[in-house]
Image: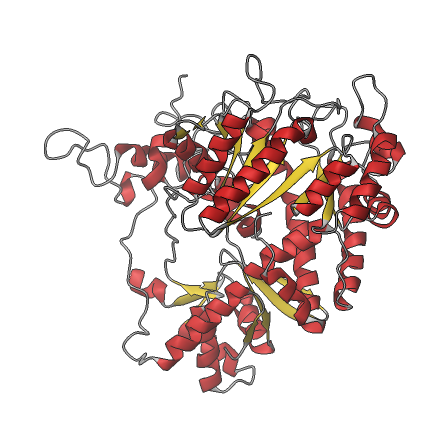
Length: 112
Length: 484
């Protein structure tokens, strides 16, 4: 590394990785990172699957859990009819749900 | 849209700081520390100057060449920063790490007894905020349980050459006969297996005798004394059941301990409360008058409405005094001397390694606590609590309960921490503190955030200064345990 001097063990590991990549044939490897699937954060208008059913007529086989869709409503557009009122009465509703795709089971059940 | 995004550079996550007139950054979440040259500053400046916070490759290159860099240098620089993630392009979501299964044990805390001859008001085991439910459970651990615990530790730590046992209480020395037996037994077992086992204990020092001190020294048992400073401060809360202070009882014993126990450093552990927060004075007394090798401070764990709780203003005062000692620490370090203020050493040690924690500490991972009944707890602070028990020494760790505890405490589930640059070291703070404050061991300790960030920044600056003027000093930390 020419511009940064590593000062702890973790930095030294980053620097050595950098040095290794320098010695490699990099021409074909230095492309942009592989595109990840785009997961829209938004309501049904921006291509989240809505309250749909899967091929068997249930919700088990949807490409995203239905709860994820509810979570979208909560984060990006406040739909009082569908989600708990997170401004006043249920501020912790999604407190245990750090990543909706993984933690959606932790969304709290709120009884009005 | 994706293709266009990947070519846009924006700043990665880091905390910039200066020390000794030079520029550094603490890279998050890696935990890496770098010193920067002017070129890096130019890139950071260029991206900061953009209205939307990002620039395309061409725009960034142009901005750098306009400041006098050759095109080749600019490309080099961008690549170096991109690779180390000081600048990022596109969607760099970090995959959440799973909670490790079957993490090998390293440390076992044995609560030899839950009885104590003092009645310190703030005690987390007996005080108003206690989580322990000791009713109907044995008050003293017996040898069967202790032996099973040692066997358990050695069996569950396969692959580690050295393991550690900490003796705890209650007042540990109220069960000194058991302590002696356990040391002998554990040493035999470890030697049979060609492994090493070392010991430490925490005590209030009231029961130390010359014979005990000799035993501790001969067996290289590290000693931490819970002590809050000179008599006037110490006696405020560290009292016997009749209300008299314990300072006069322990002072001669502590002196004898420090004088005669030569095989391991002797440490004092101070609990700061609203009436006992004169950090510098306490440090001077414990370090200079009594001769402790290291002195560490922690604010009392309590719900905020207790009389002895430190409020926000009080904590600001504590931090101010921490800074005084931190400056002193730096002077010592630049001369190559150890200062003895543990709060700096511990942080520097973690900074040296570049830790990036999934959990605030080793509780329920490499460390578990065992109570007198044989119940296993995530750590000594949860011992004897029915709510937090996770198995019994006879049947092993209850993996389901362990998993639940670890998932709660994982940084991934602490939403509030995800935008904080200090999370690689803090990871949300003590599980027990969180439980007492918020009723959930997985809740981030939000009441400490500002102080943690301030303290981490202070220690980073010290780290920077030392790395410029006396880098050899940092090698001390290569050997020091990351999670002490």
